[in-house]
Image 1 (cartoon, rainbow, N blue to C red):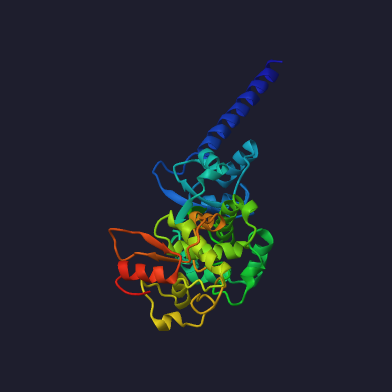
Image 2: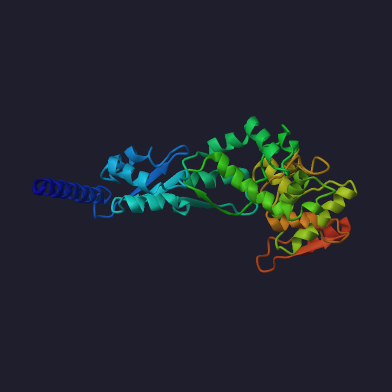
Length: 348
């Protein structure tokens, strides 16, 4: 009996030693690889799992042991692993690494700003500056027929009008000017949809009042208003001037459309500029241009949907006097000429 008790105690002791040794080994195995801070960008692919990333974590010296890392994952069964680039550190240890990966707010982000009135080529430049995509890649993607078809099917405000082969860029004017924060490894599709989502959010506020003109026409005129208006208060007035001209069958004759037609922006344009053969040129063709010539902001979009109530047919923006930025409106061409002579010193 005594011999049996001794064997039992021996087995208990051995098991205890094994358990303690295992626990110590486990704790060491999931501890930080170093006490020194060494930040490392770690990318999680779309189909990655906590177990599938074990080898890469070891390769980057973020964990000591693949086996102990997998044991931790099996025990605690973490969830919510999302695609993205995370900032991890060699001094974290397995527990802190997993907690970081569980929280999608830890995904590395970058931001870019699209100012009002800019062009889709500018957007490509802004995005290329903060991502690995080139301007050419972005512009080519935005001109791809399959991409355009998918966008038309996805968004209520993007119609077959963007498929017009006379457009310089299919999606010119459709990306809403704003500040965007995106994941560092976002795809071009994700970036594109984010900008279109924002435009959809803005347009949805006015959807019930979009009746007489299509969204494409509204964005087209809004892009002109964006360029022509000096002050926000001018936008509804200028929008009405152009709408009045359309109602009377007059040419819009907007310098904003000349700038886009010749791809050069000036304070004054020559007769040869005004004669350029382009469907964007409202000095040569009646009606609205074939599409937007830039990215209108909400104030300009709203101005076209809710224009001022006036019967002006002409306006003059005094951009030459930096001390008095003012726009003057006229009902007749004679009045307009008089104001041109008064404020500019020459006829318009």
